[in-house]
Image (cartoon, rainbow, N blue to C red; front, side, top):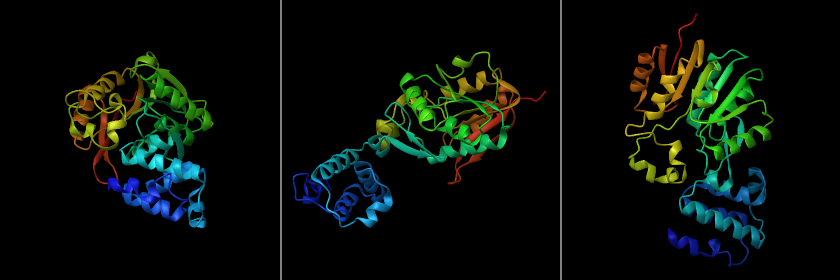
Length: 289
């Protein structure tokens, strides 16, 4: 496999190469055709249909060299989302950087559950917003909602603000601080969060894309539940009567998160499964008036 990096098609000093050959060799190296296409699309600044219409085109040397560089970065393990600087989530295209967690499709379940439970003009808070994915997805679907997004990372909030501005969702308000800290005294109809929930010594933190993502957005104490406990403990004071708290968690954590919610005084506690039938989001609501 490493030898492919020195093959003619993957060598920037080789003769000009057509699109089909570039993608073929990159797919062999990466083991993923879609990733190869995304990297080439990023270099060329074109849409996916262009690749099929121009498969026999010979690209300029500068484009070939740029593509080779990105393929080498991906072959070294760097996530495609960080290489191209963007990731799709819900119906949005979001900027992502190494300061933010890469949004994942399974987190869209959290958005779905929130939209099902919130009034049109709901006061919503996204705790640990990262790139702004959850908050901006909700805001894009509920024009009358008052959405607040908080994060302890100033760098992550900068990314989220840029995403909000580019998407025309400037009405979303951002707060810097840990969990409930930036909104002390405020109350919400619904709170959503995709907090860190991996055990601090989990070997997976040193594997795959996780090696490149901010560990503070991934791991939370010996059992992975420190941040979830903090969120649950402070939630009832920040929720309006009948307000919902929805938290994404690991597939083996559904039972313990439900227990935390029930012990804190939440009612109608539940766990929803993702498309692979794994526990993914648990939630509960405060007692109505």
